[in-house]
Image 1 (cartoon, rainbow, N blue to C red):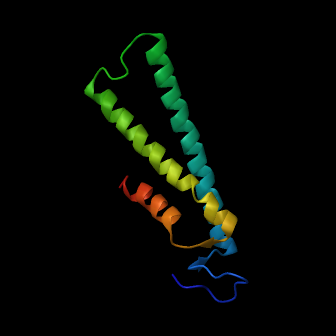
Image 2: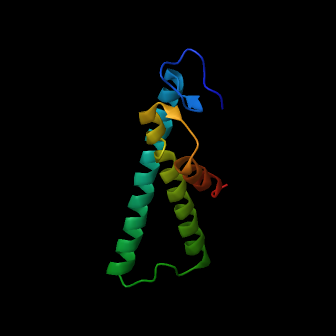
Length: 108
């Protein structure tokens, strides 16, 4: 991506405009809520399995459900990582970008 004209002191591949920043804030907030919800469900499942001496996976559907929640957890973490772009005000390639992109595309 090329640098947009009219931005001040931005030498990144893409400078984040005010509208893009607001959109990223909304997406990151929803990703954080999703992360909290998935972690809550995981903790309840583990708590129930430990305190009732039941197996965590008893049926094939339990395994599929845990797989779905694990994918949701990875997806939510990759969205929450966008806080860095919001804070920096710019997007640039590198190991952080590759990590975030790998987490997003591994769930597709």
